[in-house]
Image 1 (cartoon, rainbow, N blue to C red):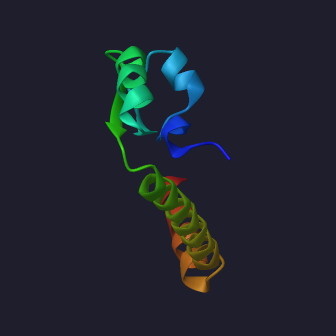
Image 2: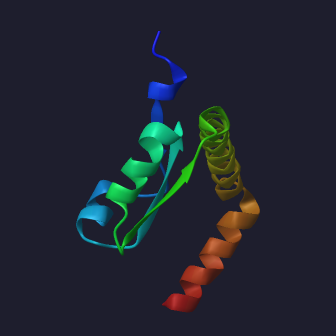
Image 3: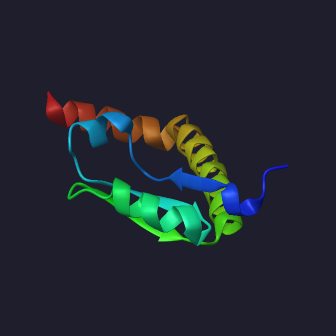
Length: 98
């Protein structure tokens, strides 16, 4: 396998088009100091902040948990929108608009 000191993780709440358009974005780069620090310094821009951390495993696990929470929140919202209460509130809101 690949030694842990040669693995880097780059991720964050950003979209490539936002970075390209110079909208504010940030990311995390995790891995060994050998590659992480120089690459973080190279990638940093006034509109693109790159934080660095040596804890690669925890960052990967937390990224996966974030996805599980997002899916769960989506399911809850979907179920709420199917409820009679939500339908009634939406109907009242639409009546107020028109």
